[in-house]
Image (cartoon, rainbow, N blue to C red; front, top):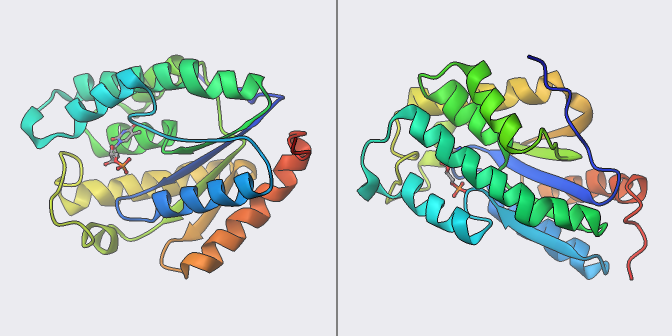
Length: 219
Ligand code: TMP
């Protein structure tokens, strides 16, 4: 089955993706501050954990106390988080013509569960696209980083960070392949570049989208 993707006509949906320690949170916060400063209404959110139910799911999927989860269970938990997030947070904001910035979205499950785990990628994609109604970000910013660089930034590792380097290499390759297959909707950056330089490139990529999506006129 092919998934054509659904893009809202109103609002602007921006996603940050990347491996562990790639600076997604820093850059998503910087973009949020920039757009809020321009007068836009901006929701800064994340997966897993962008809703009350999602926070419960986040605890289950990331806590080392959870121990081993079946790969399919993990994929379904992440999918449930996404379904709730899209329904409760993203689509309502899009309908109001606002900006949503999410730290991770569907590409994370395609990369971590689809390429990282021993699951059939097409099946993982089916579940994730179904969970989200195939809603796509207008722009995904991929902060690309060799896993050994990002993982070095963590002392205490959660369930996913604790996976071997080969797992994280598969995740990285998957993110890059997703971006290469749809360049119109991706901005790929080297996460090792200077934080300010990265923030400026992201602002430059988002500016025309604010106009195209008619969220260019702050209240
Ligand atoms: P982070 O939000 O703190 O970066 O961490 C979330 C972790 O969950 C990260 O290791 C990636 C992983 N993850 C998945 O495996 N699948 C998903 O669909 C999402 C959103 C995250």
